[in-house]
Image 1 (cartoon, rainbow, N blue to C red):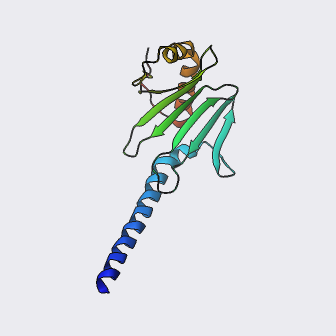
Image 2: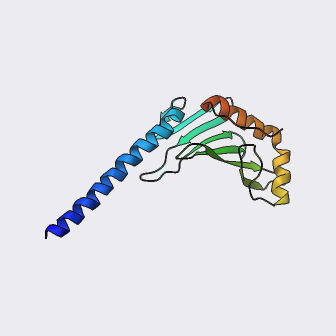
Image 3: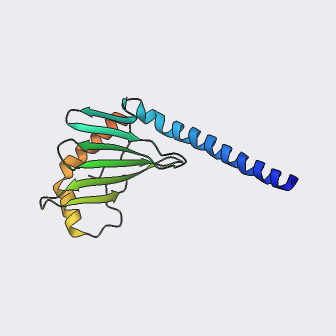
Length: 150
C-alpha cells in the first residue's frame, strides 16, 4: 500500500511541476508579445492600417504558439513561431496571380526552406513587396530582428 502511495505522489508531483513549468515558460515567452496587442474575448488581436496582428499563446500544456501579421483584405500573412529556448521559425502565406494560396516555411533571411515548388517560389517573388511590408510591420510591432534577404 505504501509503494502505491509513493508512486501516486511522484506522479502528482511531476504533473504539478510540469504545469508550473509550462505556465512560467508560456508567460515568460509570450507576455512581451501581448503588450501591444489588446485581448478581446480571449484573443489577442489588433487591426491597424489595414493589417491584422495577433498573438496565439500555446494551449494548455503545449509549447507552440505564434505571432501573426496579415493584410486584412488578402490571404497574405507572416507567421512567427517563438521557440522555447530563443529564436524563431517563420512561415509565409500568400496568394499567387493564379489565385492559388501558398504556405512556405522560410528562414530568418526569408529564403524558402525545403521547397522546390516552382509555382510557389514564383508566387513568392511576385509578392516580395508585400512580404517585406509584413516583415517590417512585425519588426515594428514586436521589436523583432530579421536578416532580410537583399
